[in-house]
Image (cartoon, rainbow, N blue to C red; front, side, top):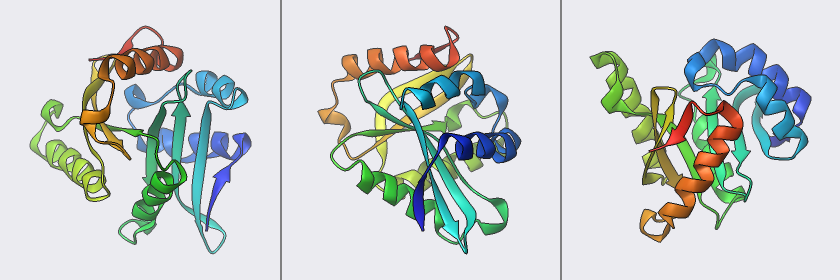
Amino acid sequence: MIRQLNAREIERIYHLYTLETFPAEELEPWERILPLCQQERFTGFGFFHNEELAAYALLSFSRHSLILLDLLETLPSLRGQGYGSRLVQFVKEHYSGQPVFIEVEDPAHARCEAEKNARQRRVAFYQRLGACPSGLQANLGGFIMLLLVLNCSPNSLDLPYVKKELSDHYADIYGPKAFII
């Protein structure tokens, strides 16, 4: 079962799982996420199996409602069983007709071959689910992320608008160290 998470559940997931899994440079500070939750500009969905969390997706919304899939994780013991794929498919359908941007670490900026291969697998995972390159990247204080997009052809994007809107959004979350390139 997939359902929307409330702010308390998002906070619990953030502190229990997210801080353990994702590099600190890639994470929004909780003190910046909480106000976005209160403004309904940050949400999450959980995939529950036998009433236990199996996977989660955390999304944020720009001031003018661009959607960014910030984080997706399947709990390590449950990986490879399709929970993440089904959660991405749910997000894609839930926001049907709206572009959903996805952050993925840029393989070109990996520090070693193993990291490059892992990043390439993540990009391929989202591409199998219909995501395509947006032509944009995010610089999170020197940590480079590719921005893929679901529900939209990159040719149909107003890139100057998207770049400005996402740059403002990243500044809201990370401060001036983050911007779109």
